[in-house]
Length: 296
Image 1 (cartoon, helix red, strand yellow):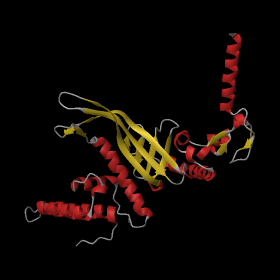
Image 2: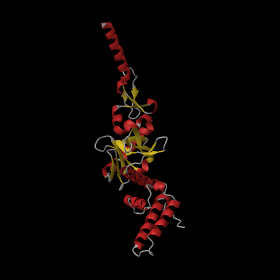
Image 3: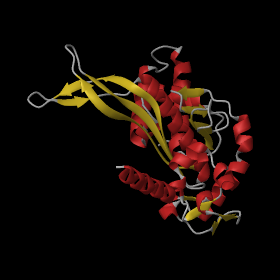
Image 4: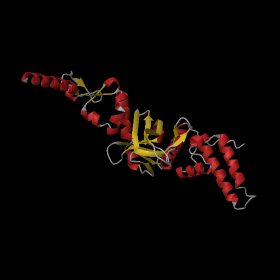
């Protein structure tokens, strides 16, 4: 019996040694070049082909370690370090004026956003110009049936992809979110739901900031002096949920309907409203299509 226990302990010890890299050959850190024994090596990146010492590994933000390093190569690491150094000033000036949950906030004045909890080490601040792709959505988990109406319970999340540095971050914004469900169909029970107004507000602001930076990137956006609140008011006036809903046809149709409803001939005080409608039209058009308008 003692022999069996001793053998089992040796096997467990051998497995742990393998996991810790005790029997690995010596290797150099791919960044600083210091020689590392087996237990000092940190292998990350695509196919675990990037070897880092503890010092170089510690230079990576904890949030990034979780989401990004598994796909990195040497150049991706260098790009990240260079970006991290250059973004220190960005972090100093960050003053969010929109937030949702603990893990997403936006500074519209400086066109910055933060993913992660700013009160811990697990957060990163980015410029909207660095985004390659993003998604903000609801992840269903269970349906609770009720007498009056059913409720869908799940979590809301944000996913952001950046090219340089190559980062893929996904953070939960809120858990145990309850959304009222509408049933569609009679014989077959199907469900439909809508986001809360609070979630739609942060999504709208995020989309507007991204739209501004995207147009600046491609050179067809000229500064109008408008802020995020003005764009949101214009969207609300024209009854659009987001800039994605704006097309030339829908924009013109809605403007004509509003001008007709508030025509000065109906009431002299409506002239002010007509000016606001045209100003909102110009703003939304420039946000989506640039400032080269064809008013006809």
